[in-house]
Image (cartoon, rainbow, N blue to C red):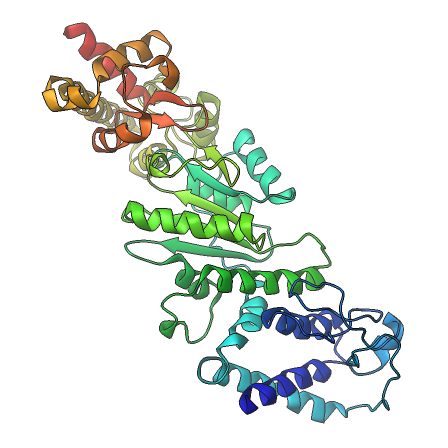
Length: 461
């Protein structure tokens, strides 16, 4: 308890130590973040212009603080309330700036050293300060304008939202690139990448650069929510935006098991919806992983990212100067795929190659994609020959025929002969010729080459 009290005195001394600094918001907000950490106290710290923060953590009305205007506040050290409305203030003393600076430096050093060993709760204001900076990496690859995708991200980030935005779709469709592009100018974005058996709660601390996190293998959801709320309180004063919230951008790769994905989603739903402590964007590398999640439309917002449209694919080729003036070769490529990752691979293969070899490279690329698609569709059709799969309710041959009749799409409600999509998802992942769009509840082919292969193989049967 003595160490706890001493630490508070030092940190509050640091608040006085920045009186003569131009950024007044830090002086006011840091002590507030500490109050939020500890759930508030009866006689709170004064907001700008007087009045205290009450108990309850999020800034209710509590005991009064020292009065005064913003202009007065600029001219004197930080004054603490006395716990009663209109209580007389004590004598005002100016702290010499060398002493104030030394106190601030000592408090900072002591806080970092004591955060783990003496007062673990101080991790909250440290987290709040670190969260004000963005840790999202630069965008991956060349960005091609996708108006609908960009508008979905804008609506989520600019408007108040209490949902988790889940970005799903086939691998290689540019989900990560789109998310990084969307948050490139969003202040206070923490980028978290999960793989294997990573726990989200720990990786959030790693992402913002928290000290001593090797000992914090896991923290509770309420504790993480308190840290995000402290960051929100500090950020709103620092950025001058009353609606500001920290943003968590979480990317989960294909090595993460379903149980860990569900745990991460539950944590994000708690933070974004239940605690209203942050905005949360979740990018799933495995497009079928979303089918294994429990339905929760109130707390989840889905964005499906598929392949480029033909217009977007041509724009991507133009940006990369791919097959300029070679309309026939472009048409051959777009006939098998418009997937961003595949177009990038073709661009890399053609980069530096002699002009005379471009046609050979493109023809080989197109033939390879057709062969891969034919193999995927053949395996999918072979599922119907298994009695076990028939008992499970997998009738892919029937489904593929219906999809071809409807331009490559087929609504789940019309496929009454199939088991629910969430139970069929493991087969989608294994054979990867078709997929399920959770936003439209439609089956669709993975690529244009898969659709062509299905038409060819069904005609031969």
